[in-house]
Image 1: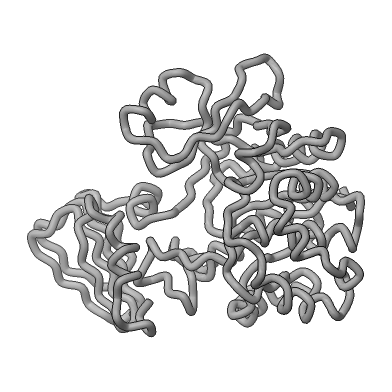
Image 2: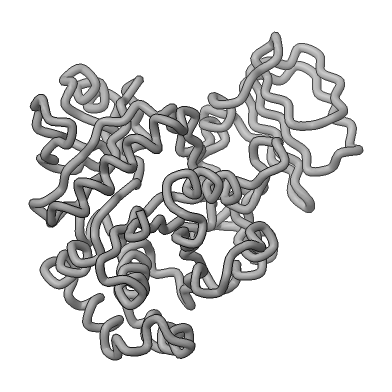
Length: 355
């Protein structure tokens, strides 16, 4: 077990959860479910059931260091990997691999998002341990594929080769489809949702970068002796911004022929949008999700209503299927059917301090 690590990716901004999620405090640091814990804290607890707490690392941006330490005070410095720039997931994954390689060249590590929900945590643990075991004994990239329950157009898909094995060959990754294509994927029975959960050995993933994204490896490996030392952060600050901005999916996974998947029914939700939160949370008799302590509602149906102030009274009449979020200095009232526009609205704001 000592060779297994989990890296929690916690550097995203969560723009589709604006205005609750801001650049200064993204959604992984929010108590988005209203249970007294942030998504990051819940993910750390989940990871600590699979590997020792000291084998969990948080990969994030430098500007979130204080938020991480505030929410996870038990971490020691070498458990927090801080990126000086936001260059997407591929450089982050390689940085993590080089850091762990310096610490333990026989290590295997999983990459998991910091802002997802998993209801069946016992099943998740079983699947992750299966993935760790396979990755430790094979030069393979292992991903947990989520059993699809609907023709969802918001996820990427994994096309796998049907067999009786528990770990299946991946044929190819598919980008987010339209509804008709998603329905075909669902009907075929040989597609899974891509949840962004990957497991590999440090040797395997470093070799994958050498084969498929050597430019990123060359930038980060100019002085390997700095990893695992007190000079690591200074070195990363110098070289990391020079890496290519690209996801690990595009840089590695879609180019590799050694990708495997484990079908997993783990009660997963990516909580990527307000609608996904609405679908996840319990509702009142009028199908409203209410995250406010004081409300007076009349003829209000199918809404998500959230306020950050515990003493604010919300009064609404005759509104159906809307997202209503009152967060600090922003009030959002937006049709649930148009929620994909929220990211664009946020990005086009002329006020940087509100993003």
